Length: 296
Image 1 (cartoon, helix red, strand yellow):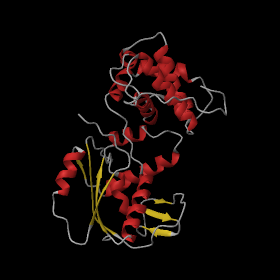
Image 2 (spheres, rainbow, N blue to C red):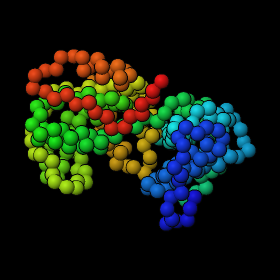
Image 3 (cartoon, rainbow, N blue to C red):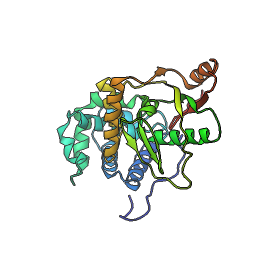
Image 4 (cartoon, rainbow, N blue to C red):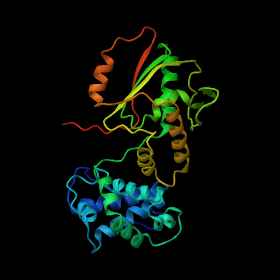
């Protein structure tokens, strides 16, 4: 990586490139990206994984990474294995990782390599699927959009359809509080509250309601299942402490009342939902925050 204070040296590369060199580039880019975005612990973990991949030791985990069959950058390979290692730390299954995640200035490479050897069986399944993320803070954008729509004269009763809902955290937006440049939205006792930065004119201060909130995901996450919740937490960068607090609040909310979330392909879900009669006086909103669409 570059000198301290220099511009990040991650590259703009073809996401579809494959092969051993592409694996190294994917990890090097992930390290640089993390360093440039306030995630030094995650950068250190990814750099240590790359050191193990480039090292002499071997097991099924390392060989699968080295000979990755897909496009490692497009497949988010570094974040898959980094998530698995983070999960071991969160579950206290690998106490030797604690100094790294506390930010202690230790040499992470031998620690990570040892963990990848000792916990090979636990880490291999993390390579089977892409990272899952679900951040409640994104709901502020949805609320701002609905205020704008209501301000434009559309019926202020929203039937929300979300694709790529993950755990459905943003399907619980009616339970959160929002402070948007002086405009306050939400219940009296919100599960959590957001006050995002705001530029420009404030949003319209108009009342609105939710007629319904429903979403889909090809691999939905059940927040009430501790194992699934742990997997979602593992993909949160450890530096983002506020996201862990929000995740715990979302888990508590889901345990009280689960979001309306179904397992379905986005296209099929949207087609089926839009075919249903729309109640008078409602506005349908198709929404998503981050979705990866795979086309055959």
